[in-house]
Length: 321
Image 1 (cartoon, rainbow, N blue to C red):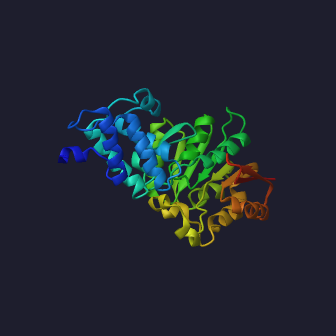
Image 2 (cartoon, rainbow, N blue to C red):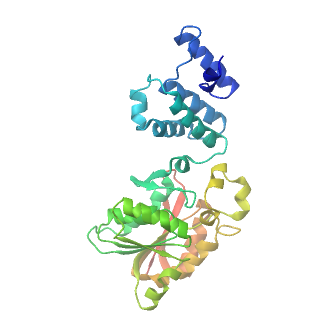
Image 3 (cartoon, helix red, strand yellow):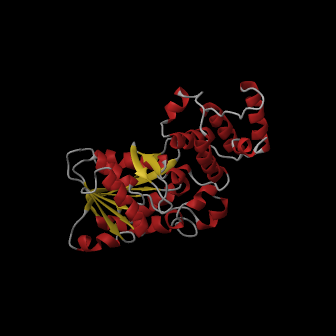
């Protein structure tokens, strides 16, 4: 086999054998093998699954669709289309990074959809996850009037996912989004501009309620405060999925037991809320009961647990009396 022929074969013994067999079925002896869209998908999904990636098929589809410049449906419409060598070369690099280094697909592609909104994602922000849509849904339920000028504060905005989803659904809301990371705020501002929300969401740098401290001292208050703070326990770092190594520790770890930021938010949030104001926080399901108690101690009432799509306690909300 020539060097050019070898370059077109996935680089594992099992894959090489599979390609040789496929080539023998399709092509006369001596001709280089031809990889179709469907064959690449099948091989890659199996390759990912063998390495313990739960979303093997989906990841393969997303990466190949990106390389081919199409959507996932088009992959199956054009399932028998040969994939060119330059496209396979780009695809192989993505597959190596996903399977070997366990880089999340969102970082490899530089984007992630959240609440049906396309968001840019980098290593400076936590990748928006489906579970966080539970927090957005709870906030929107608490702010039912689409035409009201709700004042909303998103603490620790990261990519801006929560703030931008709320601003998108409540077109007259005045949303403030804060983060301690300047790099994260740069990503969030870029997302706001790309979605046409740059004039409706303001971004402030600082920890917890510090960025709005002067406003609060002057008597301003918010109708809703929401946050997906760092809540992973530092002591659990070694047991986390390898993908999390590629996301910012600042956005993941909430102290040794994961509750440091949750406790601080629960203690201070009442002072930022208008009477009857709503607060909601994403957390680890194991922290839900404790968070309800911390919010009660902080002066809020009616703690409610909201479950994610998998049925796990994911968000705790409460109101200022």
